[in-house]
Amino acid sequence: MKALKIATLAGMLLASASPAFAQDLYPVTFQLKWVNQGQFAGYLVAKDMGYYEDAGLDVTINPGGPDIAPEQVIAGGGADVITTWMAAGLAARERGVPLVNIAQPFATTALEMVCSEESGVESTADFPGKTLGVWFFGNEYPFYAWMAQLGLSTDGGDDGVEVLRQAFSADPLLQNQADCISVMRYNEYKQVLDAGIPEDSLTLFNFADEGVGMLEDGLYVMEDRLEDPEFVEAMAAFVEASMAGWEYAAANPEEAAEIVINNDMSGALTLESQVYQVNEAAALVGDTPALDVEAYDQTVATLLSAVSPDNPAITEEPEGAYTTVVTDAIE
Image (tube, rainbow, N blue to C red):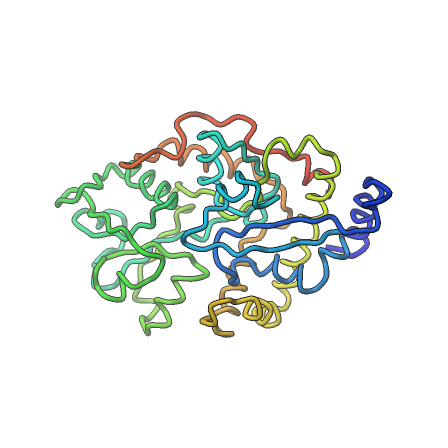
């Protein structure tokens, strides 16, 4: 992203503000899906490097966590924009929270399933009779769509698979509690490798490659906010500056990792793990923040075919769930 373009957007934003407000930066509260880590490096870099301020914005980035649902935060007025998976965004919309995708920085999926050598799993044909670790809280939808596609029961038995409700770690594989587990390429997969398991001994399945991919970290706002031209301009500036942050992070992963660690509240992150995570997360970012409609359609198809025993993500084709008005303003 070029500084000139960001400056132009900043000028548009400030020019559209009232005279009393024009001297100030436009306030934006941004809610993350998870804790501060390399997954969100582009945003943390954009703030640290002053890209948001240069774009006329005063951005507050709030970390998420296991007890924080971004969809609930924004519905309650606690954020102007959130990053979340499309499954969660569409599910919330169907349940009455009118979220709209305004941009899709992550163009591909990082959700994978990894199987140990001891499991004997080399292809999906080896799944029957195995125990598979699955994340819930909305992350289970592509898994159930995949099992439905394969014609496999999720109730156990020799002809089906046993579902283990997996915590957000690689422990079930490392402790031999499951044959295969869910991993994010930028996070839990590294935990498996760090445990000393040779990469060439593992069998890895990418959900997108299996035809059940769904879009992950996108940017969402409440639908009624898009009626305000000033807010749309602010979001265009925010997306543009965020992409500049991702571009910098991709070119400078160690510096970006240091910025992430400086924003880590747990004190548990290491530079080595975050350099890896920044590199893997940056590789997911597309050349444009505009939503790929084909990827959107695959996500919707995946969600509609997911046979979740608890509750479906969506039950009908969504309408008005995304807009190009923001990304059109920066292209």
